[in-house]
Length: 572
Ligand code: ARG
Image (cartoon, rainbow, N blue to C red; front, side, top):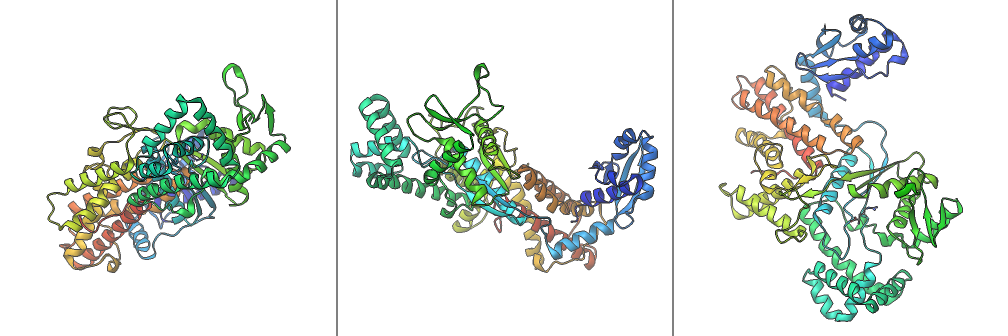
């Protein structure tokens, strides 16, 4: 652990314990970056109230018990009782050197984390909202893994349910071969819409479709075979998107709604036996306490409809039971659209009532809507939902244009455009809070300045070019790091926070914090690059130190972006 803020937090806590008794050693010392020193601790003010003593006196007492000679060059009390803490240059340099040589180590006790993400619906075009859940979920999965957690990815595909009765009937009606040809040409949306209008227009067709669902749920062989075809077709498409996007999901992570079909009856039985689910108007429902609808009526989570069918909620109840019992999850993250918030609250509440959720954490990581530049739901000009493949292709194409003036051969240019285009889409998604809406804007995400993927990639590529020009490699740059110039000091200090930022991101499920941090690093590097010549440093020791600092910067940028699922090209 070398994040100065954490180190100082621990030291001040020790001082609090020594000065005022053990019960104070877990108080938050309220350490924040400061413009007057490196950090300021504000704990004396809040503690003054609690102890009924003058904050300044409390501050004096803390300082007299504070053991930071190895870390701080200066500790000062200012104003009503702020503690101003200034780090020692040699401490920063020493920690940075150690970080460079030993790398980031994961600490603490790690857990099994189930991450439910992506989860597109079969037989419908995957939309841009699924792109977002995919990107955010994938970043969280990578970060937890990096910290040593056992991550179990669960792609809760919408591959089951009533729409398949309709799709299969429509397929039989127009002829299997015609249907196959249509589906093979990627017209899945059109196919779905045509089936839907038949369903809405013709009662007899609708009845047949319903009977088909019963056949499907009952395991009828021919029906299942046709269903499998839909699923496989869709999966092939979804996998192409995943591939293009460079996400870590594989077929092994597929855990669609259909997987839970054999567990549903048992799940419901258990809910009934425990008195959690009850009959209501012919249906079987859970009424989790605290949820009311209109007229203060208790809100039901329907586990079995009056026609005997199972729905989305039933599947999620079976899934959460499976995740806790069989997958042994300590924590479950559901990276899903914010509009499903009530659904998850009720599922978690029901699972708690059923005794499935005890100490484990279950969290809905709410994903905000993706908007177009007009501030409305993101659609094509003609008002249709945007095909993801087209969107990604366009990102790559536009990235290619941004790089048009570079003198690269075709293949290199394509490779770079690929990394920049996809990276830009991902970063734009990740750099805003996952719960906020965000505006999908190619121009903004591909800009070479500002908090964008191209800017960060460019910073990393610049570091690489220093090494290339000097005939060095980052691996050989081992320091020691010495901090003299303010820009060296600021950069080194910034780099030391990497590990604790990752821990924080995992704890809060907020990848945008990592983006903000990497942006700060890139900016600190830009200043360093301007003010501190590396290859033309005044002497060899300074040059080696600056090379080492550059190598550490590169490592943090490439690792950090990698954890966001973004690949940095060799050149740009
Ligand atoms: N398929 C659903 C949708 O597109 C998302 C599923 C999310 N995961 C879950 N366990 N319910 O809305």
